[in-house]
Length: 492
Image 1: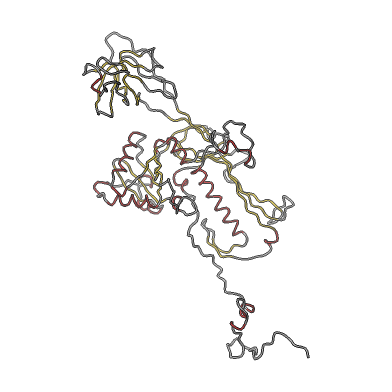
Image 2: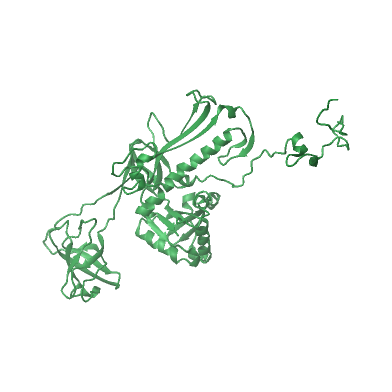
């Protein structure tokens, strides 16, 4: 006699949805790990995705401190002012003993650009001994304009030996600056004029790309996930859940590349091995203009670096920064973007200062609204004649970037909130721009600020024979860090 399987035994279906003694399956009657219960019923599934890492995006830093503007070339070039007054450091007397009146000026890349002329009155300072003397220039050896020797005579001393001349060598490490001139009656106006020089800087854009691909078969298998993404998207997403995250990651790359960017050096491995990188060719032994100068690289090369800042010990370390800002542009409002440790050190530092010492913060950068500053995550304080707005920079804290590692030599940045007046080639006029801003490639025919397009044969696109949908992103941009001498990089 034939048999039918499975045999349910005494399990009898009920006509109503009631849990009775003879109409249920026991979970432990089947073979582990599947058991009968899992064979008969679907598991309980949470539709909503758990946000275990909170807001994962890192972009937004440049939106707070800069702007984005178009350009049409492979390179952006700007010039910056030099110092107005004539000053030299690292000077030395040519010999010891009394009667020595000749100063030797330091070289700059093997060239002496002398702007000190006869009849100039000068201040000579020796940082080692703390002695300062003033005098007048008598002659410039070899003629004015390009020479090492300046002969000068002090006003109040017989010679310059009171600056601290050693027994066998002249005083070194001197600073000399011109504060005026002294001419006799009926004489001419001097031997030469000082021609100002401008300093030129440049940067170049890089092309940043990303893509998301899904084949047509997977597009036909619908699986919904309830999400609330960092860009404000909420609701149910299908396969475009992955596309959404790829786009968010690309948006972060646009900012991270501007912060971390490096120019390829002549002795770097990329220049020597560029043929091994897809899309590039051999450099032929010469330096190749690849890469771009990011924020950290620009401040390291042309700005100020504060090493070993320790705000927990008091205000002295921070006052060093203030004194250095006085020697630069002395921009009144500045923004501090810090990692968590340094942010807490600032809190410890400020807790030791009374409100009377710190003074009130103007919040001019936030339309004089403290509430606006707090809503954006900034807390303000005033020290000396400067207003500072500090916030914790997520990029320096995130475990997937510079956070959560023992080796993290970037603790934060100080960025001035000022602007500079430059000539815009696109608009054909002078405009004011933030010291920190992004330039992207664009023309009337193509805007490469943020390109997005779909290729393939699925998802509504019919551009190739590939049975998939490919979502592409592209941007070509660079960061312009103007007046980097007003920026400060905090390093461990």
